[in-house]
Length: 149
Picture: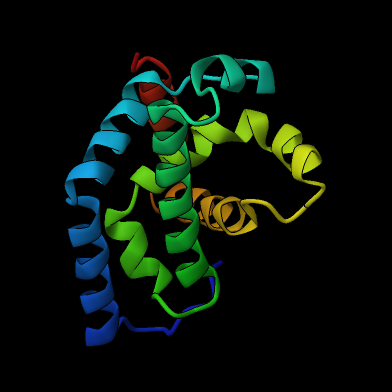
């Protein structure tokens, strides 16, 4: 499981609230809406077609993935209590599910095996947390989001 304090603190709560406020910023909200509705890729070729360099779609993709990678880094490093985050941060799992098929290609392209490492690590911990808490809920979630187009 994630490395976090056994009990969430007021600092954890304040960080979750600040992260929520960031998600409400107009440009990030627009990017998240696009990502949820349109980012369905299975290869680097799909990414290139959907998000050409310099396009609004490219900016939206980078903004959403960058935001969730940053959040994941807080959880992975223990700065943010994992259990508290997992109670309300399920969108991170949506992001991971959408990028997971392209991770090997992105890591190869950047010659960096650590690209999106925090996102991968925390998504794995989140899946385990969900399965421990409510078996089958992650698979139900995956089925629901795969039908969102």
